[in-house]
Length: 228
Image (cartoon, rainbow, N blue to C red; front, side, top):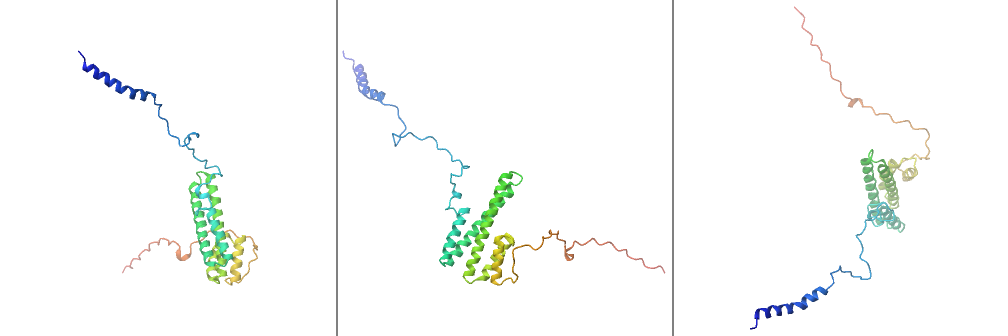
C-alpha cells in the first residue's frame, strides 16, 4: 500500500532543494564601492590648525571680520577714489574702519582675558590689537582725505583729531594728521614733528576744592547763660 504521507514529505524536500543549494552558493555581501578600482577611504582626519598652509575661514581674503577683509575694503576704496567715485570710497573706508576697530577691540579683550594666565597668547593678541588699530587709523586718514577732496573739510576735522589722539603727534601718521589740520586752517601753529623738551611726567590729579570731601564738622559747645 502506498504511503501518501512519505511521498508528500519527499516532494517537499525535492522542491526546497534547489533554493537551499542556490543560497549556499551566494557569496557574502560586501560594502558597495562606486569605484571598484579605488580603495575605500578611511575615516577623514582633522586638519592641523597650527599649519599656516591650512586656510581657515577667517584667514581668507573673502572674510569680512579679518585683516585681509579690511585691507580688501581699503584697496577697493582707493580704487574708487582714484576714479573720483567718492561716494563709494567713503562707504568702503567707513566699513574698513568699523572692521579694524572691532578687530582691535576683540583682540584687546582676549589680551585682557589671558593676561596672567597664558602670556604667550596674551602677547599675541596684544600685537594683533595694535596692528588692527594702526590699520583703523590708516583707513581713518584716507577717509579724511576723501572728505577734503569732496570739499567737506568739516567732516575731516574730527577724524584727524582721532588719529592724533590714537597715534601721538610725534609719530608719522600723527604728524600727517596735524599737517592736514594746519592746511585746512583748523590750527594756526605749524608742528615740526620734533619734541622741543622732554615732557614732564604726568602728575596725579588732585581733587578740586569744590569737589573735595568735606570734613566732619566739630560739635560746638552751647554757652551757658550767666548767673544772676
